[in-house]
Length: 124
Image (spheres, rainbow, N blue to C red):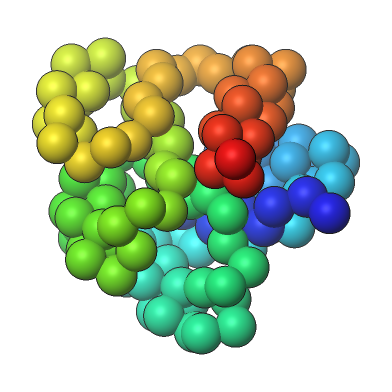
């Protein structure tokens, strides 16, 4: 069985596109259009047990990706996180947060390969 993924992106088009790509590859994807909602969702005990990866954007209103990951780390210190950003320099902001960081654009085949790599490492 494939890992479940929590996808956080305030851009509904990008979220829907990534969700479709991941679902076609067999992943169960829960999407949230803002980080606050994502934190509410992952606090649900049943969902938290199923999530094997969080994919988040960096630039979002009300809470940045860095702030979101800091909150997430308090709840789930070892949960794999992939940050996707259009700002290459943003990678330094995540230096102490144990995340995988990639710059947009991230073509579908690269996204799937990276997700498989991250989820595979977490399973070992």
